[in-house]
Image (tube, rainbow, N blue to C red; front, side, top):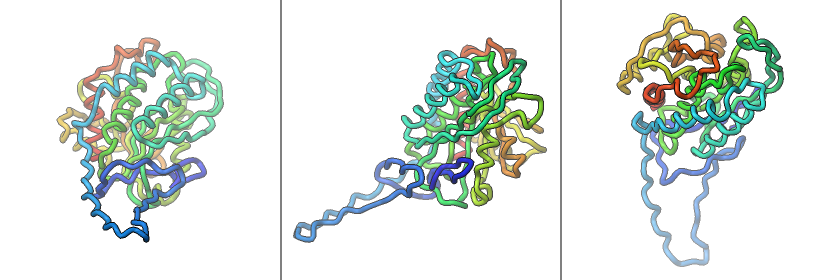
Amino acid sequence: MRRITIASVAALACLAGACSESAPTPDPAPGAERSRTSAAPSPTSDAPTPPAPPAEPVRRASPDDVRVATAVAAVEHLAGTVGPRPGTSAAYRRAARWVAGRFRELGWSVEQQRFPTPAGVSWGIPVRGGPSTNVIATRGDVRPGRPWLLVGAHLDTVPQAPGAEDNASGVGVLLAVAEALAGRRSRLPVVLVAFGSEEPRGPSDDDHHYGSRAYVAGLSTAERGSLNGMVSLDRVGVGSVLPVGSAGDGDQVQRQLLAAAERAGVPAVSDLEQRSSDHWSFVRAGLPGARLGSTSYAAYHRATDVPAVVSRDQLGRTARTVVSWLR
């Protein structure tokens, strides 16, 4: 099954269930079904066929599988090396290629969904219009209409900020989650998305969240009906308590995340009426979504939003909560 684009259906990872494998197998090419073949003895051979070794079960992912160093390295690269990366800029394209490469190194199949972003004013600075991309990571087979989960984080920044907390922190946790899930099972298939052009280019909701709105627009009716939950990771590297945001007066995904944080030993707090991230694109379309992050900090949308702002411990708390939710 192909990945989700504006005109196509997504390839999602078949991770749930009690499946077992003897070893990880390569992901199929987009649009292709995974094929399994068995070797047969030559019809001219009289040698008996040895029995196949028993398959070893694939272990379920655990919060203990999180490597915080993976998230920290992403923050340092995106904010320290790439720097400011508005969604239509050359810097954003470099960042998107880097994130795609990291997903591939971790064993995920990657495609980029291209979408238009208008010119505008982003946090006081004019920005050019043009194409941007969502980086979409999937694994294995998925069938339309079967339940699935999505975790996303926006990759772009406002023009004046290197964006360590906003939002290299979210992308770093996304990569740490991708690593924790590598070769392990989750309760449902999972798609990971680094969204483009989340930052505002005007004053209204419709001047925001271009990448996630494009993604939602490309979902089929079956995919919309079977999405069990979307989590946006946005500003997740500051503070010692993890905000768990709902776009309304609480919802199922927020409740699940609060329970997941408790299981992972992470202090968390409910944050109601939270609409200022990519989960809102899903919720406004009638789909289940929530947000992790949003602790206030002095460097917000400033040139001082550098890697030193971000707490290693808070990155770990967030990643552990996400894996607890997915497992």
